[in-house]
Length: 129
Image (cartoon, rainbow, N blue to C red; front, top):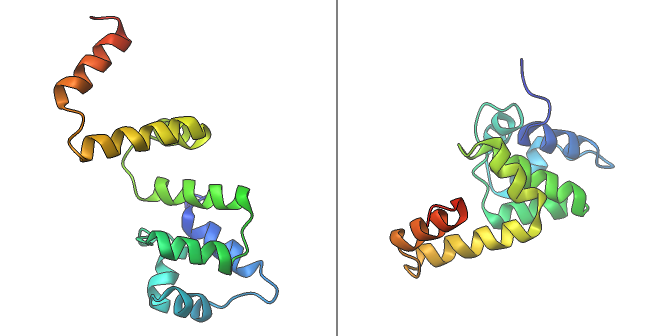
């Protein structure tokens, strides 16, 4: 049974709720992807590989408010990650967590935090130090 609250179903519902509704062809053309690919995404046959720019276009084209944008981004991450749901939900739920996680990841990617420093931090938080 297909999950109702997916990125694909969200996009399809939002597309069809426009006045007048956006067709698959209109939306796919404006996003720069093929009609069949957008259809596969809406039916959850393919994962959405949308770029940040395409997601911003979706927000504008579908006239999403902040709450709907947050839900769309959550569903996008959920569709494209193997991270457990509780981790994704916690990061999305708390903007401070999101900012801290992104900062930590950026520092790690830039080589400013070593594996040993990460382990030291985790050990301190676990009370093992």
